[in-house]
Image 1 (cartoon, helix red, strand yellow):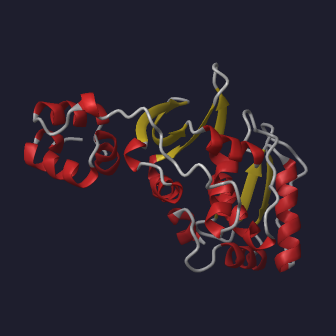
Image 2 (cartoon, helix red, strand yellow; image 1 turned 135 degrees about the vertical axis):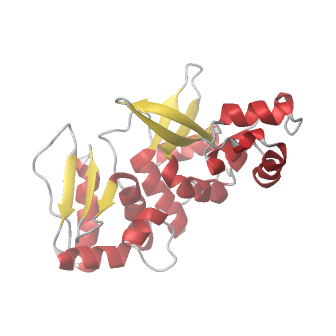
Image 3 (cartoon, rainbow, N blue to C red; image 1 turned 90 degrees about the vertical axis):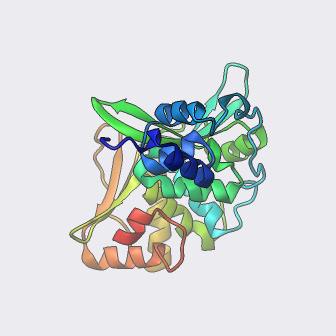
Length: 260
């Protein structure tokens, strides 16, 4: 960026007054966190010595019972985009990392589980030669992790994804979350699709759609790069599926809700 506003003390003070930490200031302004931190320390706005907490607070019982649309939605989103790691000491770490352009849903997730948004980190990654800005949450609470493992969010889950047991009324929310994570909606024409390394979850989604609204996505019999794809460009099907999944005031990725 040509205008390096973070060098302006008054501007930087206002950002810290609003967002509190270098990570959030960086996320909300687009400037590198290292530059934000360096000038904040220089102007005595921020003291990096006293900001790191060893605790990782979260509502550890959030996923113990899928009893709301929001919980089902986030579970679906995590099934698509979340990761569970087993660390060398035998404990688990959960993380979810997405493009910075979709940060709205990560902030909604943090609010839902009582996670401190100041601990949401943003960084740049090189993906096949392309620099991408990512935003990530990491959680080390073992009860929280174990509740997700019980729902199928296991280490190396790719190819093993499935829709866990939950009340039928929340399944559409789970599916919307999964589509927000690993699906797409057409911008200029009627189109909706989902991809997964697990054919089981795609079959479960089609079974639900068939029973709930008497329609379903077209099933792909071929595999490309170990990924199954279910989609449809039939206007009538797309209309009924989107109308069912993206209802008024539902929690969702803003970008895909607007397309829906």
